[in-house]
Amino acid sequence: MKKRKEMQLALQMVSGYGAEFSAWRMPGTDPAAYTNTDSYVERAKIAEKGKFQMIFIADTPALTVDLGPQTPMFPMDPMLALMAVARETKHIGLVATHSTTFNYPYNIARQFKALDVISNGRVGWNAVTSSLPVAAANFGAKVASRKERYDMAHESIQIVQALWGSWEQDAWTLDAEGGKFADMDKIQPINLEGQYYSSRGPLPIPPSEQGQPVIFQAGGGEEGLELAGRYASGVYANPYDIETAREHRQALRQSATRFGRNPDDIKMYAGFMFSIGSTKEEGLERRRQLMSFNPEEIPGRVSYLGSMVGLPLSVNSVDIEQPLSADLLKKAYANPMDPRSHRALELLGKGLSIRDVLAHGVINYHPVVAGTPIQVADFLEEWFLAGACDGFSVVPDIAYDGVADFVEHVVPILQERGLFHKEYEGKTLRENMGVPYQYGSLKNNNK
Image 1 (cartoon, rainbow, N blue to C red):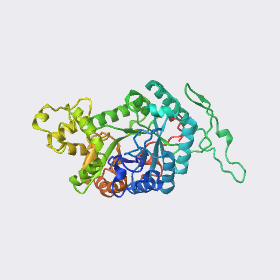
Image 2: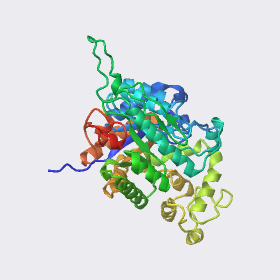
Image 3: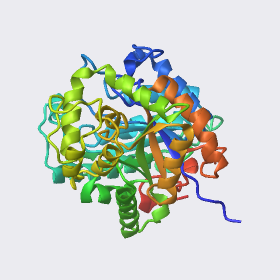
Image 4: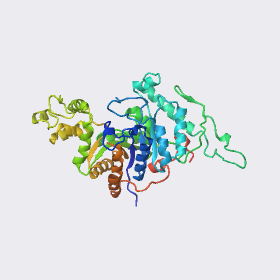
């Protein structure tokens, strides 16, 4: 009997606190978790207990938020955080973002492959381009055009993969009796030179148990689809509704096919945020409390909600503790330019107060479920069975208890429904993702 397809789960780690910038102020949270590497290790071990395929750390090489009321979006250094996790875990994958725009391919190749070997084949590289002016300024550069950034990305990935494969797989002889550590005839320079990057090589690191790190991608548009179709085994995506998610996943699979790959070898992970309570009201109350820490943000959120439903809403024109009036509801419509607007209009139409509509996360950058473990599981099941994704990149509202709540209360439901595995499939990230072994470029796969 053919085994039923199962979803995959990645835990997105956001600077030690959770998805919401005010999570650092919640009772029980360590306000200094940003510099406490043990907090990352603890969450990763909980996720491993829940059989998550991987943890994922996004990154931008710049400070992008106001650190007065908010916490940073990313760890101090993703690779150092993952190194700490690698030493304290055995199965869970370790994926981090590194920009192809502001990092030399040799440095990327060395860091990720070294961590891949140290972790016994559990590492992935999320290869992205960088377009923020503040990031460019940190490197004394200006933002390149989109075409140039993606041309750089292609060169970077090709060089990185060549460096990863610059040792033949049997080059490491470890012949202590004969005095031959490695066979230098099987360790060769790559001598690649492009318009933007070049590297002589070789890399002084042998293959890992999975050959080399798994490549991920997170960009959109035609350029992103091509990058993913050519190189990526995993894609982090930000769709807000099932239809958009299904279309994006299908486009990724078609792109992989165009480049001669099996479409099943590329997995799409949809971003998802949650607030779990024993009741729906309890889940919503967590989000109300998080909102209460930053009252100065409420006017902007109300105005943004208004733009989603075609109304000039403001804290001066409406009472946010009350539902919209019948007259305003008659004028409201879902902004066709924002896929989140349909959900916002639906909740307003049910008579929820404006504050509670916002508490449902309608303006967040991922879909949000605030409610019971069953409601969270129902959402994940609906998307997965609809073919909207291969799995989810889940982001808890508050890390200190949200990860444990998901593992203890949601994962068992998914397992009982036959939607999520109960044991790891293998030792490496590739095995646990169900993607092929790879060493060097896809065209030079020797195993």
